[in-house]
Length: 529
Ligand code: BG6
Image (cartoon, rainbow, N blue to C red; front, side, top):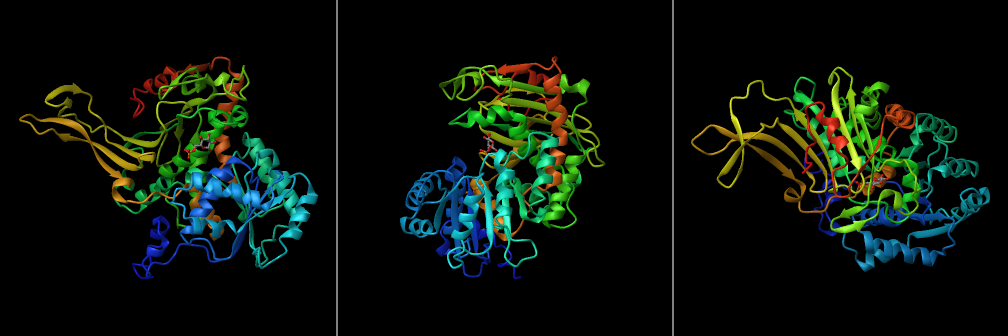
């Protein structure tokens, strides 16, 4: 490969495909494929899947022979499905929509109406896709459905012989949305049952956080640079914290699902733990999907929840009250649509875990996430230890007026979203006739460095499943290991009456108890102003 050719992903980031330099190779798909979205009448298809497939199409990353079939119960005909997807793409596309390109794309969409539990509808579907010219033999089944249908659907696909056995030339891959299980036992049983129908290599368990450009960059940051990796260990790092704050509450019909999940299952078990894996895992032996997934799984296996006795001090759960979010009045969690009025489900949680392995030796990890918080903000903070001697006074100044303040340890911040970037906070001598220092930042910002919009996580993940690359998908052992860390917390919350369900006001950073959780270790949350 020449140097120019070795940067194929550049073009996945560029908007107008026709301006692409000829010397760049594409990062696209080299096999034709039929993508079947099961549950295609839902929100995920409208908001994420179709706009992402369209974005891949206009960037010329899809194979020239592709078909997309929506499969759902709703009695759409092809024309109305196409019309509705057109509207969805216009509303949610990250790239400018060109009418002519959209029309071309829409012509590759089809619809099949059928019940998920009805084996007949799969047989009819099979007869329908026999037309090999229109529907390429390689198949991706995307299960955009609620978890209670995962297994029935896979069993029905298998029974109808819609899934090619692994040794055949044409392949079948099944993408499974979250939540994958409710606890360790149910995830293990789901894995076990799914694997009676599919080979692990055919299963793509999605965690869209792994598809975020900023999450993928964590490994490049660690492994493409030589100066950071040597200090990422317990000798230099004081602790890690991850925050995923959202301002949204229970929009649309979300409450029905959310009230059976809560913040821990909805965000921590998957997204936050995967982010933690990226910053704390061992470098893989090579950059293959299995090695990468193995390193992530290994990290999860060394992650320790608090002991039962520590649960009240090291875990916090809470629900939002009525209040104001960005100036608008919002209802309390318990008054939201489809939430049980006496629900005990948490819309916020904060935890202190530790990583017990050679590199991290018991390092504390603080995680917090919640709905209706002050900001939409996801960031990973690595706080380093203080320098051994504090020679200098630290000041905080406004204009010429300075106050003494605490010296800040060096802090590395991965800003996952919004305002994507990385900052390194350090102390610099403030220009003056004295030796005082001020806390400043070196800042890398995606927006200032690259003037194109970042690809949607789903674009990358959909492309990867077409390419047969499962690096950014979770393997069965990873999902189970993550549940093994969450299970003791869920059990404690169910069984220990001394762990209260706190409340917090919308627009805040959560309950005071979450500040106490970190303050008891003489630390504080980053970015909580
Ligand atoms: C989903 C959760 O997986 O992630 C939602 O179910 C949450 O509750 C969403 O809002 C957050 O994703 P993002 O990409 O907007 O941070």
